[in-house]
Image 1 (cartoon, rainbow over the protein chains, first blue to last red):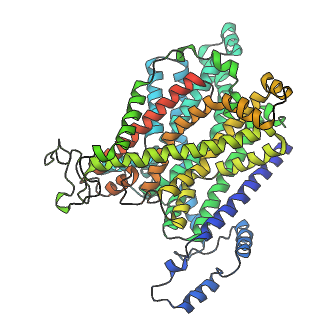
Image 2 (cartoon, rainbow over the protein chains, first blue to last red):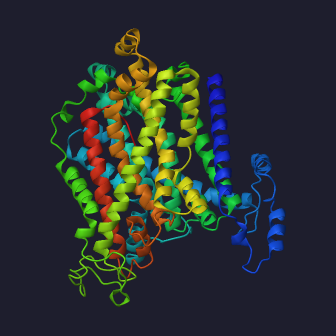
Length: 306
Length: 296
């Protein structure tokens, strides 16, 4: 198990290194950030000074290495726009994003589990059909459109919930549900299909023959094994959640990482973009690592596969 | 190693799966909607009642025809600049469908190639390719597209490239998993004994056996790509104005939604319809060709 974790950790580090190079190259290849920082009246000399001050005149390799060296200890430089340390901005925004993601994940788990399991158990009934409609709609509705409609109708016309910002629990509801909606759909569908498969297996039939109470068969015997594919996909769901969060945070003016990314990109704020992308990638990598370890723990076949 | 969804797709199990899915009716609804939108996209110059770019400030925010103050001149109303919504939605279908189809074709071709190579050669090639795949998968699509949009400038090409550059990884994973199972089967060994080379085995024996899965994935992902493209256009990193794109039309309507709800509502409905149709068709294809395939 330790060897497995070690190998998997190394993989994650390699993946992160690749991403850091990509981000660095993309951020530097085109466009000069100085045009955005300096006033129109800036002279040639001002440009040279600013370039030197920000270290943009050094060779790319050197810039990259110093960037990685400092990034490892959590120093992402200074935001070109906010003129504040990027790490400070990240520290401010990250918890908000994580809270929103946790809320959305909680909402989707609470909805997906009972629905997915019951849809499989009562296959072909109205409940199953309803669950399938929910899931296909969830994957077909554009998140940002839903967000706009919710803001207009639930927050605007009905005045039930706050439309934007982060003030107390009620402001979690709209962005949380918008964000969780897409995940509910996928999770429920996955759970349904894997439950169907497991319910059809010999050991479930045996449990029934033995006289185990039906709800124990479903929620204990069957669900345990049906969860394995769900765990495999948890990492991918998380990456989707992170991606969707950028749009949701933008519409709901949520002070999170996604909105920071959007702001950073629209003002071509290199240090911020790099920091946000790397932080996001690192979080996704850590989650994937945990998921894989959990998976190897549940299903020993994975551990000895290589 | 992670278990790939495709690794679970044993051919003999697939054939015996879910009797309810066999002999199901053709998905007329999805095929109809997709066909309709394709037709609209191709015939946009003929079908659209007005010039989608023509501005007329006197006709700003005209409501749809059934609302008070609406007229048949603008059946779905007009936007902030007095442009006809219906015509813009008709022209917008070109962008969405083209982006969806092109991106998915690019991504699936590259992803399938990587998956076939990784599954066939195994060992170090497999390990290296799969590391690349993992790295790609942990990169949020929208972030990359946003970076590209700002560094290179927003354009149709950039949207397609940005999404394809990330999306191929999913195909690579699933196809590799399938190839791994196929490699265990006798016919590959027999082909090898018969003297077939790597290229021949990959193109003649492995590829045809993964086409069903590819078709299912491609269909299911067109919808996803259309949503991502619309999200990017919505964020201002997709198709640049004034080209009509559904995502940017929704963005334009966002601030005036209280006053002119139709500007945001109709493009969103168009996206919903098209994506729904592709997803339903994809589901049907999966149930028919590859019931064991698990896909987001």
